[in-house]
Length: 429
Image 1 (cartoon, rainbow, N blue to C red):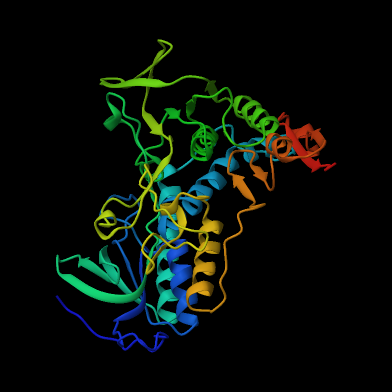
Image 2: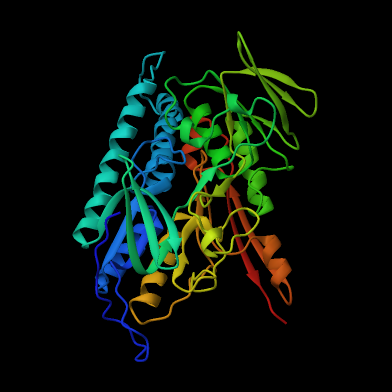
């Protein structure tokens, strides 16, 4: 094993024997949170190393890529597909606004995929340059923790490198979860959905969260028949109930078949496609079945429990309000902690970590009033409390203001999407 030594000049315990470390900070995982923490820590003068799995659009336990989920197989490629899907209805609208278009509009799925892949490769390169420009040393390979101040990186050729670090940061994110039903291997996750060779003619989506609603909108917008199955009465659990109802109406208005309070029980491969069976006895045939049933923290190959890092029952790394684990020299940010799994939140956590550890400015992430968006067609955006949360937290009345309208553009195009604005105000007494 190779090892280089770095004198730690920040030892402030006068009675402690001088320690030597290769790095002030070593980060495992070069997604949004990890890259932010590494760059900002380096800007404070820390010597920083970071490791990441090799790049590929579809992740696995041994495949990843600098930039992480959001850049490579999340928000960015998904939004590109949303933009592509939205043009279908826009072109139809154009006819009603006087544009004379051919009766048949052709769509080239492979061209859109190629453009999407070009963009994530470009962003992958930008993230690498950001690290390099900040003076962060990047290692390509799989990292694991072998001690409170020691990491091991397995490179692509199998060579193992060992490095010591005063601080270790876990930023390995999360991975899509498949439900344990017979035939689950016939389904795909959002990773594969972003790189399908052929656009499905009939897609089944199982799940009621962001990813389910977004891919249902994408595939329907590109002309596929879509059936969306979810366990609750409405999609998007955790959002304001009134807004959930608006999204459901808009999905149906766009031609998506909704199946509330329904579970998938089995997938079977047939000559005609994948036979999908539900707990209500329904059966249908689809080209593609997407599981959008949540994500699990990416922690099981890091050797965490062996070194004493505490995990919860989902595998999430337990941290305090400063993102410190049960081992004082080991920290964690982003989806691997399963706090609030949003890219801007991971960036905030990475920033607060760097300030706390190297900026001499103890900083706690603030999770109140975090804005978020769902890339449905049309989209949903939210900031602050839902009506249900406001009622639960209020000491007095809650005033709810709503405005429902059909945009003027739609009066000519003929679309009847509901647009709604809600404002909640708590009155404390």
